[in-house]
Image 1 (cartoon, helix red, strand yellow):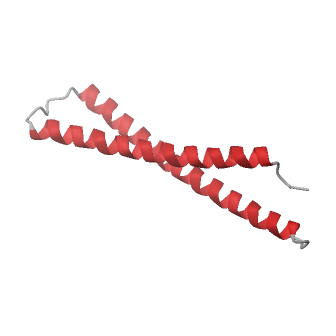
Image 2: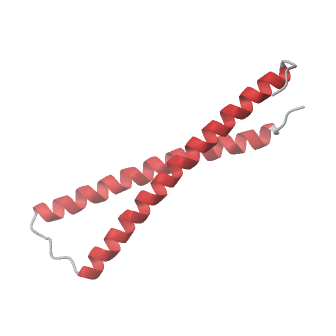
Length: 97
């Protein structure tokens, strides 16, 4: 018998893919925001209110943290799925894992 149902494996695989995609989306968004800020600065429109600068800084920091977390989750899920698949293969072959 399987240690984990096929349905649960599919959920884990979907979560891994989602976490990876979300991480890439967040990182891409941070890059675009940086490009916009750079363009505004190059155009001479650098007079942002301190509150706006603070909020923008907070947003960028939050996006970076979330992107890092999503990358970590994707890596952890990939490791766990691979480990499970190896253990299951040994089990199916009649060995002990």
